[in-house]
Amino acid sequence: MGRTESRRSQIRNELVRYIACEMISVPTPIKYACAFVARHHRHCKPPNGGLFAVGVAVKGETVGVAIVATPVARPLANGITCEITRLCVLDGVSELHVCSHLYGKCVRIAREMGYEKVITYTLEEEPGTSLIAAGFHIEATVPARDSWNTPSRSRTDTVPTLFGDEPKRPTGPKKRWARTLKRFTNVRVEAVGTLRGRTVA
Image (cartoon, rainbow, N blue to C red; front, side, top):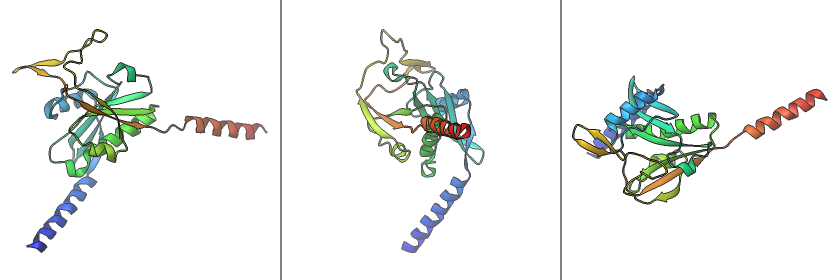
């Protein structure tokens, strides 16, 4: 029985590695990513737009998307920080590390766009394993609140559905994760200046 289970585990791991080799990033319009979130996300509705979206496909089928936007919290919207507002993957693909792949892809794109920091939120009870694997750390804990609607920034907390109004996002306590991005702008400028100096000399 032990050998049988061991063989099954080996075959299963080989299958996972094979399928993972078929996993690729795909261009994903924000409109399509929002539709994917609306259909598959467990507890959040689609956001109101974003800066960009990324997707992952296995054998031609999209299995996960991520949407990046300007930080929802105004104090964090400093022009050099962006927020992963939604990440959604299909059930049954956790062993392919799709979440970590999407987080990493968002970080790389944000760096190329000149952002210095990427943040995102999880529910308090979520461990954030994929975020840790992608280099994020817990930056703060956000307490629960009944509504995100404020006098300075009017927001709707519910969306109409066929079954009545439903919450647009959880209002319980959350963890804010962050990853600071290394910038090489100064290094490139200094290198160019040095080269120019040598050329002139």
